[in-house]
Amino acid sequence: MEQLTTSLAPPRANPKPSVTNSSQQVAGSVAKRLGNELMSLMMSSSPGISAFPKSDGNLFEWVGTIEGPAETIYAGLTFRISISFPANYPYVAPAIKFDTPCFHPNVDINSGAICLDILQDKWSAVYSVQTILLSLQSLLGEPNNASPLNTDAAAVWDTPDSLCLIKLLSDKLTVTTVFRTQLMKHYRPVKDAA
Image (cartoon, rainbow, N blue to C red; front, side):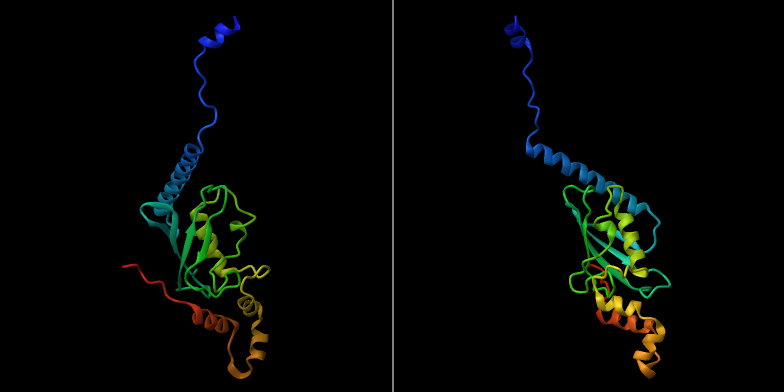
């Protein structure tokens, strides 16, 4: 009797999808998420931030801009960033770097690498491109000197005006002036792509 029921049962479908099919589904869901985030970002009214794919055919590589927040040393400056999304986004943070040189305690002046907790050990799948851009914009005005990538920038940022004046003797420069001088020494304005 057992033979009879086995032979009458329909053949079983392969329980494991092929690796190619599985990775296509993952890529499709990531692309859908990135498409939704792009639309959300385009519809948002967050001033001073923007990002979009570098090309129409690749949602995994983006370029963005961040304007320095008002009333900070970075006011009036615009920084270009690169965003690379991994295949397992949003479960893993995107790789982000400054393309525009940025003199900042939490940005490596040479590589553009960024030290920001939400891009590392504090990452969560609920974060979006907009969340990241706003966090980076906030970081410009409020660096975390506890974990600097640029120790020179951190040292200037931490120097009280009175110590700075003593060090600079009769130059009468404030920390803000010294920091802005260093910032502008490295800054390259963002040029619009033609």
